[in-house]
Length: 109
Image (cartoon, rainbow, N blue to C red; front, top):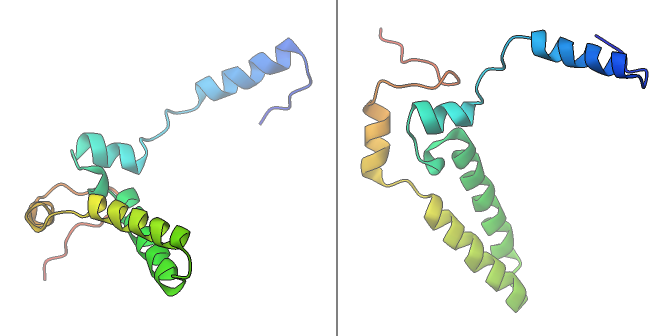
């Protein structure tokens, strides 16, 4: 660890420390999009976004008092439709052997 003392030398010390560190692993979403060639809705981030949008839609459905709320609800439903993964694609993903590092391999008994 280095402390910045508002001098060029301390700034360069910090830069050197950063450069010397090992390269950062690829982010999970990068691995899923590039290495596994998945579409955004098929990634863990896409799945999280989908579930968050579903929760938002449920909350908006409970509060249907204003036109603005109804417009928001329609927009959320449209976003959910765009994030839906077709069944055929889900089957391909399920049966493919490519796994992300965040997902464990199947266990055979």
